[in-house]
Length: 116
Image 1 (cartoon, rainbow, N blue to C red):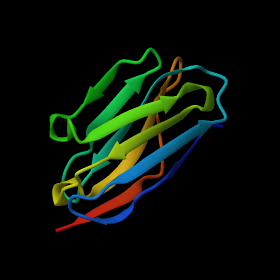
Image 2 (tube, rainbow, N blue to C red):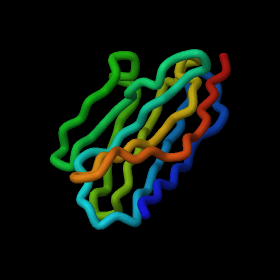
Image 3 (cartoon, helix red, strand yellow):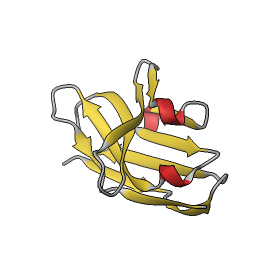
Image 4 (cartoon, one colour):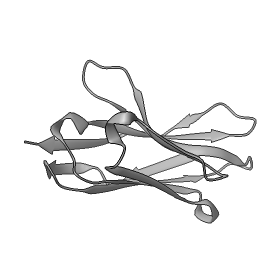
């Protein structure tokens, strides 16, 4: 059974930093990509950043230059370093893992709140 364990959310002042992590376990299938989505109240879930096993990265325009996604492929863990946080970054952040041959998996979500 696939498990995604997220950590690192919390409350931070504008301009501050947080680091999210997500560890995936329990699957015999290889991972194609790992990433982060977020959903603010009343808004649709949106892609924040994604990194493939081959190293290709993709960022939302709103976080480019502030957020950095990284992966430890050996540990099946993905990180999101978030710097220069803004109140509009406030959302529930979800880890997303795409396995070859399986439907995408989602973490339980971790709250990030940025106060002004």
